[in-house]
Amino acid sequence: MAHKKADVNGFNYEQFADSLFGLYQQNSFGSVSKRELDLFLFANFKKMGRIQGCFSWDIAQELKISKSKAQSLLYESELRYRSQDDKELIQCVLDKIPQFIDKGVVSLVVDNRYVRDCMRSFLSKKGFISDLSFASDVVKIPIDAYWELQSEYNKESVKSLRKEDFVNNLKSLGKDVFPGLVSRFVGEPVGQSVSKTLSSFFKFVLEKNNVSN
Image 1 (cartoon, rainbow, N blue to C red):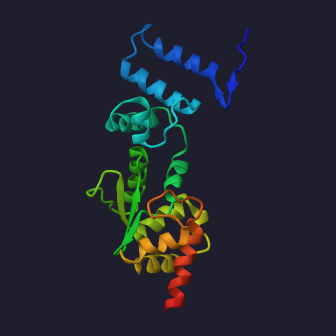
Image 2 (cartoon, rainbow, N blue to C red):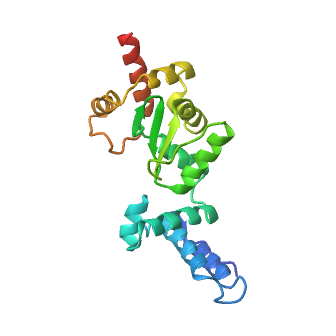
């Protein structure tokens, strides 16, 4: 007799049990490596909400492991058991105001190594090189490359903007201007998570520069 699906809060526990059993007996019962089992359980515990953290440090504290191990679990589990479409993962990063813009370079904080690699792969195909020399979770890219990412993965934020205006106006922002501009715009200290405001921010910068000129 066919089993009934057991969906709880959007997670299918019966399918999880079937997948776990299949993994555990793929060669012979119990022969699966601890690493493979850890990755499978980590990915599924994330999906079912048992692991709450989104960032590697939050997960490290939650699971009482090192940050580097949390980053490794996030990276390898995403490769094997993808939780979201790559576009959705990249859009989550791009949907926030950049950490910094100075001298034509945009700094983005990307905690998830898998997402960093996806972004860098896309940009390398477009002929852009990203810089990770400052810190592994900070991706520094030219504003032209930032436009390419936004127009590919986050079209809504730039759909009413012209590339030339976007690039030229963001290049005009200096290191002394950008932090204060962000603080005034969102009404929060710079560095806090700001989402769903990016399109308005871009328009604000363009309009401010047009008035100044």
